[in-house]
Image (cartoon, rainbow, N blue to C red; front, side):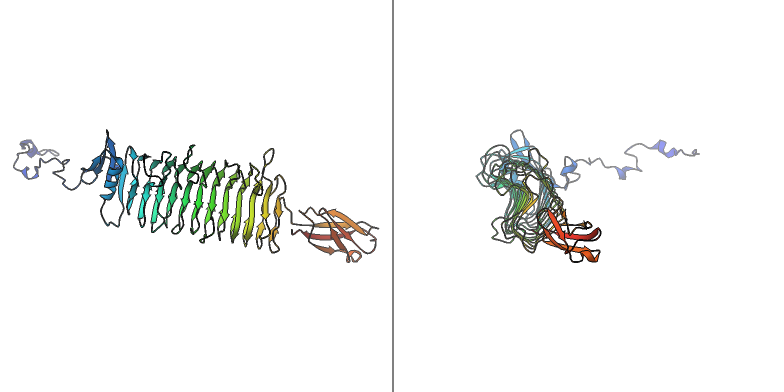
Length: 492
């Protein structure tokens, strides 16, 4: 009889050949492809979702099929193997397939990415590629591409690092990439509708590769609904971020731009095509190196563009400049210590020229250097500015005037520190006197004064004013001290 917890039958088992257990015997190995003919586990988890992994082994480049484990393509020319792997993805797919790149690759021809592709990783050095070609290219009518974690060294060639064609391209992402030592039109040229350019480093370097290469260029025709966010752009020879005519509804957010050789951010150019409804917010633009006057943020012939919460400083020219534009908002920016080269007419924190129906509010424009280089806080150039609202700006502590220029007959200016346009108080005509003189503390000669008499002896008081004082006069000497309340405005 068996004791509790002990089964006597087990002591009589003969092993794998026991009659009671042969139906469970299977000696096939579970890690062999013969056992699992349809899937080979990838080398690591990062490859599980990939279709190909492209890598270098000794002097040979190889493209491994992550579904079969086979090396589908190999050779000594990296460009040929990479393009073969990209072209070998599922034809006509409507889902994204991923190609992962490991090691360093020297590219001798342009790489063309097809639709519905994730192009991830790898360091690419251009060598002998045809001038003006994009090194990594997204061509006409390509959609749904992610370029992630790619490093491109253009190697001083007159070519673009990562280029996205402006015709028919949609839903393209370029993220966590690096482009260095580029030429031609720029580090990244981007024309995709519904695009994202985020967390990239774009560095022109210290050589002389092109005279008009931008850092990131949003091209016309199809450049709509693009977000350019959290990028670092260094040493660009032209504009660090350039939004071309024809672009609409783009966002330029939280980018860091350091030592551009020209302007920092430019929205608009020749005004040939409409350029509207952009948001430029949270960017830092610092230290241009162009002796003729690089501008931090420049809007030219645009409509409904908002420039908010940016820090622009130590530029050679103006901090922020707006020309021939309407219905814009320039709000909550810091523009300070600019005009390092003091270029004629581009030596202010904010420069407005032919700007209408716009709001300039809550900006801080100052210069705390010794000696000061930023001449004015806000300057209106020419005579075509009008119908603007200039509210609540702090314009104190500039070298030569806080707000200057012709503002326009229909522009409203209120509550600006450093440029007082309204003031009020109480003046007293002493007993036996017929007048009183007092300082109004306005930015200029009052254009409008309202008096409030508290006694009949001063009810007929009249006023006159100059750039410093207001004078109140009554017809006859008063018999006791008489107070008169006053409110004055200066409208330049």
